[in-house]
Image: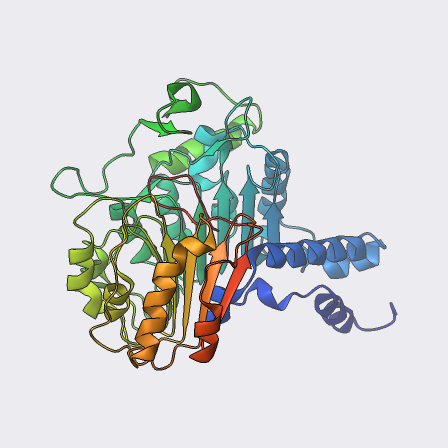
Amino acid sequence: MLKLPTEILSKIFQEAAWVPEVLDTSPSIFFRDHEAEVQLIHESMKTKTALSLVSKAFHSVMEIHLYDIVMIHRFQYVPVLLRLLRTTPPGFQSPRGHRCRRLDIYLGVGGINYYGEAWFEGGHTLWGLVTSCTRLEVLVARVHSTAPGTTKQWPHLTHNALWKTIATCCSKTLRRLDLHGFYIRWDRLEMILRYLTKLEVCHIVHASPFDPYEGSYDDEESRDRYYHFERGNPHRSVALRDDSMNVGLSGWFDAATVADFNAAKRDSRWPTFIGSAPYTLPSLHTLHLDAMDPKRINQFRSPSLRHLSMILPSGSGHYEPLQRNCGLFPASLTHLVYCGRHIAVDALITLFPHLKFVCIAIDLREPFPPSYFAMPHQNLEVVELISWHKPANLCQFVQELLGAVRETKLPRLCAIKVIQFKKYDKGRKGLPFDESEALGVRLEVIQKRKHLTLCGDNRRHN
């Protein structure tokens, strides 16, 4: 086999370890299982490592493929990996990091704790990994600190140098951005997204509202935040503070690397931008925003948007801005996941006349307005109802939907799915299965193990 030309061997090895989902940013990503995708990538990386360890000859062939995908689950590997990505191997013209096309950082997730090691030292560049990988097409960063002595997690206070670093290093190449565990205010989210004109998939969790009448646009990050683990129990809460000015070297990185981190924070700048709002994201087709600000969605135009997941902040005053700005959503928008202030189902789908699929989280602790379906919706095919209560408690909503089908207000509705996160022995009891079957609508009760976040609550669906 070693008598084959190096180019052929390289192609064989590449195909042996290739995972199609690695760089796939097509609209099918909306339906994919992220955990299964990560597992496939993990197996691919093991295959590449095994091939590179066969012999020096195999390693020299595999060298070009070893770092096209980088995935981290434990912080102690970050310093070693940073040195490797910054090093140019023999026979190559550029550092290894320049070949990296996908970077996944998972810290404090999957049962592996992360206690904030060196966060204030280099977290604003994700410890130099983003600046080392200059051709990133996919950036997935899910970094949560674990509370000492518990399994509770909280997001990070994040210096705005991180957003400037991503805008500077990734604006020409990034097609997918997935951020969990970083507090990012809406004004900074607007600032970073306007540069990412090639972005196709954007998934942001822990965005927070911004009021230009009360705060300064793109000012420095707040130095503290009070984060509640459980409501009404101060012993289960923690005050987060930026202690970067009061701590010494963490010991994880040498002095020269720490100096680079400090310089990156001190010298961080937004790239030059010519233009003004509204900003256009021409390729964006899938968008998930935690705590969407309906008053500021008019800052963007996304003519290709197909899949939207949005969580509106709790409280009143958010439906009206959404209603005013619904005309900004393109006709291509066919899939919606909604969570937040209770809106009648008919009022919600009326805002999006081209919807084929809608998923609505229902919290029965608050009153939910009834639906009357005064106007028909010609395109809706599937409705998912998510609840943390017994499926029978959703009978009102199912009956309203079936009534709309009976009155030809939902002529294309073919399926109603009730999603539950607890197993109820009599979960199907009380639901109108016979009536739905007679109307030609498939009614299902499905159990899932993930949770959908309600604003102000601790339930999360990733």
